[in-house]
Length: 248
Length: 325
Image: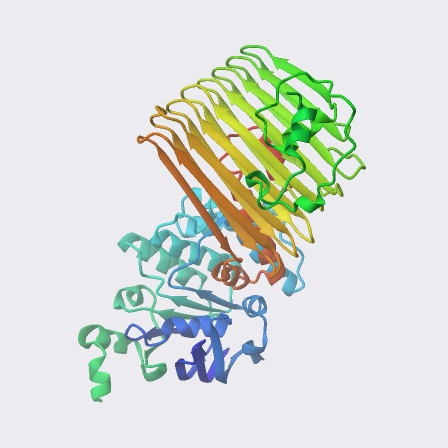
């Protein structure tokens, strides 16, 4: 499904942030990526989506055998990749629902499908908003405009639910969420997850993984995955931090 | 002194004239003035060539009065090179005026609007000119507001020629409020220039100036806005904000805020931003699968529409947002 091989990427001044990432994600899997601040976790999601602030120095990223690095950003998204960044961007003046409809229709056009009808779209968005227990006011506001941190994260999962991607890379989706919101968002992700899909979660805490059971847990440090394991690794990291890994 | 004598006294606009700082004055050619001026009003204190031009050229005057407490919606259209409109708005009247495009075929058009707003009246004036080929277009507004009145002036300019809006607003009565929202969507070699003087002549008067520019090609925009708060005009409040997005390397904007404050207990602010489309917003939209060209149009449209969202629900808001769809 998603295959990342020896991915190296740097920022404009030449500083290399990713120093050889290898990650294989198969359908039905949930991968949790943990690691200290500044280790390259957020950079990884932006690089595979093609953020212009990063330059790929080496390596490959394939989704279902297609080279993502050769695609335009919108094409990567329409091929089935979804990323949710740590700090979702506010776009005042662009209505949230109109934006969602435009995004969905762009994907449908890419897949050769007709535009979704108004009734069908309303039904879809009603269903997903109910799943995420979202307030009606999300419909009328600008994209993430004036949202709290938690509201932005919930809106990101709404987008994920509408766009129905193959692989979702969710960067610290649990940050800014209160206990109830964390449960609702995690349930939403579990609901969207399916055997033919995969999720990569970046998190600092076990609490999200109490709700979304990872298949694998990886530790990213200094731009490389230095350790991988099962769900028990997250518990150990929660207890002992990261220092013991270097000791090893 | 009549308008013709005054315009001859002033001469043609010059670059070193503060009222014409950013305007390409070489493009203003002397029109054929009549032998005599039909209007006998005294214009000895008028310094703006564009304010005098229609009167000096004996423009036909349309006068309209709205009685106290009445409501009216009207379209204003000038069908000649030069035009003058005088609006008298009664106490507590409510009026909405849309100024339609003046599609004359000559090299210059100049319109003047004299608007007298009575106590407590609520007036909106707006225009959303479609692209036209007028080479040179002047619109001058003189607005006198009595106590408790409110005037909202909104415009969208996206012509192919050179336009200049000049406006002198006198807030003569306590609590009077003036608000201007201007949007320029320019491309090619088109230019749009705004020159404003807002006089806070009474206490507790308020004014809002909000201008946005989307400039492509070799287009030019300028905003020369001055606010004068008189002595004793306590609690006057004025704000001015100009936001510009440059969509090309060769487009340019000039902004000159001027504040003359003769009283202590007032609040006056001004701000100016110039930038490109927000790269993070672009990334966000395309990362959701929206093609770059569509994403760019969404951002441009939202930047433009946002300017008019704060307007109350009215014919102006409806028309301006409709034009931007």
